[in-house]
Image 1 (cartoon, each protein chain N blue to C red):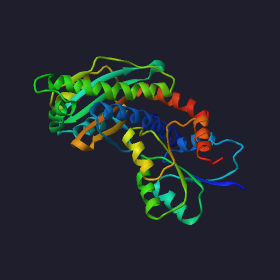
Image 2 (cartoon, rainbow over the protein chains, first blue to last red; image 1 turned 180 degrees about the vertical axis):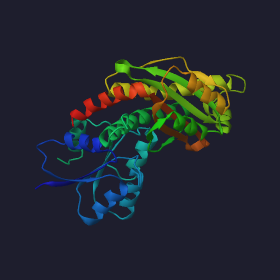
Image 3 (spheres, rainbow over the protein chains, first blue to last red; image 1 turned 90 degrees about the horizontal axis):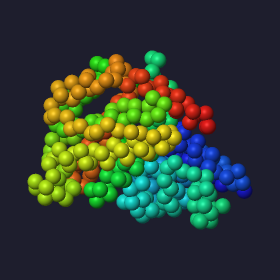
Image 4 (spheres, rainbow over the protein chains, first blue to last red; image 1 turned 45 degrees about the vertical axis):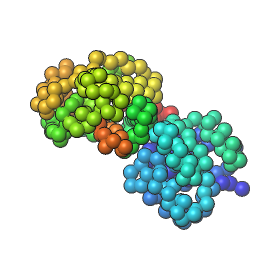
Length: 121
Length: 201
């Protein structure tokens, strides 16, 4: 059975980087979102198993998305992938319920290791 | 416009800048022992007149540190760190210096070097390049001087790629803006490098 995955990043290049980092062996059905508002629309309309979330975005940033997910009690495993690597930001997103923080640019090895550590695949 | 970046080039440049500013802000946060709030950077192509008027929008800025950068493949430009008057007076407190221990000018150059070199080294590594730098210069505290300085730099500023990055230290209401100016002659070189990255995708 395939997993539903949502990649949310305002950068087309960054979305492609994440997409290319997903292992071929993992059967996924992928949705893309350009900012937090789009991501929340997807989350409200269908079940998503795993979300890869950027932080610094227009419209609604990643922290805002995590807050909305927490407030609305949406069931989704969120992995933050961001260039904002400050320790305080990493703690903040983990406190808000993200499973892990990965720094940009993400590498396939790190992404797969992280997913495996969290029993996703 | 011949120098304009297409949508994919702009997106790629913005992502390279995001990663670089993230690491620069992390360095700044560690140096000041605080948190730096980041916003989406702004990238635009400006002509000489537009460049002057956009610098004029910083009329309440009173301290500007400028540093030239030069990489391989004709990548070059000027990095300006623009401080507001009230902020530049507060830098000594932020850095934990005793009054008179280090001049405000030296403090501004210190903090600018951290931001500029971290940002540009990370940017360069992503494009498999390496930067060298001119000595940072603190420009005098008037708009005319900044404008004059830009005109004096030996670049052709008829057209420039201008990148604005805002570093906001929320705990102290300290704000500084990094403005990267890439002259016309270097824009084509940047585009070539970006196209090489995009080919992989």
